[in-house]
Amino acid sequence: MTLIMGHLQQKYTTNYFLQFDQKGRKTNYGVVGLEDFLLGQPRPQDQSILRKIDFKNKKVLDIGFGRGEVIKYAKEHEAKKVIGVDFSKPAYEIALNFLDIHQIEAKLYCQDALNFIQNTKQRFDIVIMFDVVEHIPRSELTRLLKALKLKLAQKSILLINTPVFALDNDVAKDGLKAQNFEDTDEIAATKDLHINRYTKTSLKTYLHSFGFFPLSGHIFVYHLSGQNWFNPIGHNWRVAASQDYPVNPTVWYKKEVYEYAYSRKQKRLENKKLSNKLLSFPKWFVKACLYRLDYRTAEEKRRAQIQTLPILYGPKRGQKISGNVFTDLKFQKQLLGLRK
Image (cartoon, rainbow, N blue to C red; front, side, top):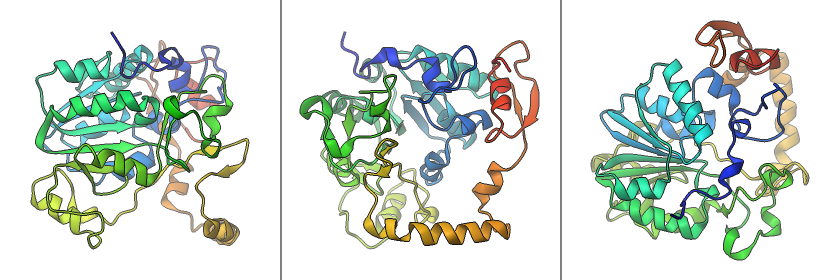
């Protein structure tokens, strides 16, 4: 049996998902957003996409669910049924525990995504693939999408979040392009995990070839007829809503956050425009002045708060303790049941 999502499967360890090893030492790699996971929510960049979707009474499939944050979000936003599939046993165990702690009911499968999709008799209104497509060789992703189309409801939607690279790059076929070098390539534990790399445009083009029309760089509707990419702003959103696709037309204008491939070694964003580079110092200076006057953003204030959160592992599992999950490493360890 060929695993459609089995590329370097052995690297997706508990350490990879939780950013700590068993001795309580912080790793320098892994899935970002540990603090938000401990808070019981998806990362802000994922929420910027999810908030545009109407989950009420919808059937949702989360492919590569990881720690389970997005499954929790979908259920809390009134999804009728949520199913998750991930080939990683550590991810499966982490997500089961996470959803149990937060009393979220969902069905999880630890198996190959292609086999699951080919064998399920269910159809889905919303399919989510956050930080997944970059981990699947493109030839195998093509097989997955072809199978997925047969399991979609008539008015369905696909959500994808993947890093934006400088150049389109089928790494398995063409090798790694130098301009696409990023931080995951610098660490042995994550080297070669990002086997499939897209630009904003190439991702849209690739998915459009399977019949997924891009409402944005992250949100794709299946079989949206009579539209093109260059309609007036908001037009395609209104059309999708009028045709009963599960989108919220009132928030189409809200900004979605893109993740750009970054190299700590090269210390630059590969895709950063010259204009943004020139503006970086004035922006930093203004932000510093506003911070001194306590004109902090909502995100900055959130990161400064003390939170009361449940312990996820260990003999005190479920007990709530207080601290700042963003600044207190000891608090993070306590929540994960690790040594102090």
